[in-house]
Length: 227
Figure: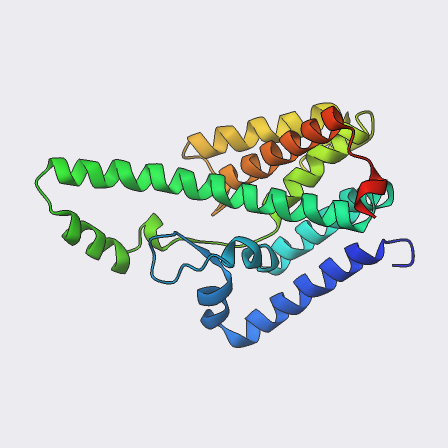
């Protein structure tokens, strides 16, 4: 790991430590550190950040940490540590906020439908607290921040060639990133998701990353301002 920027090493180490710790501590770590729906009793504002260090499986953390190393390292080398950290956490929080907003819309549609059928709000929310609904879904992982990093990588290195695992054909990053975002939008709006994936968190991280990159480019924020 000699050529990996120190901050990337530190982020990977913290993620691995939290993942191992969560395997021993069990549900308590998910109750405290995973991101809950804001109206859930277990929600804490710190979870907007801590959920980025939680992962659901070995494959989940391996994929995210590999992406952080592969796409984050060149950005750190260009930007420096402080600018990268600001970008990384901003995109992770942006990802979480969009996913929570989508959950809110879905829950409100369901609540409004039940209210229209004559049910009382107190009874509805009481049933939501104890049920298996989106009200009790938790979100974990650095994928949202990683999508922001991917967008930044595509902006900085548009002609770098990347490959999808299931499509081993080199694709330039300026085409690769929009392609995977279209896939996330498709899976997010359909019932064909490949598992419990927060697709709109990916989109949220990407959109936040794009907006930050656009703002920085417009205002010519350079590395020296973040040293």
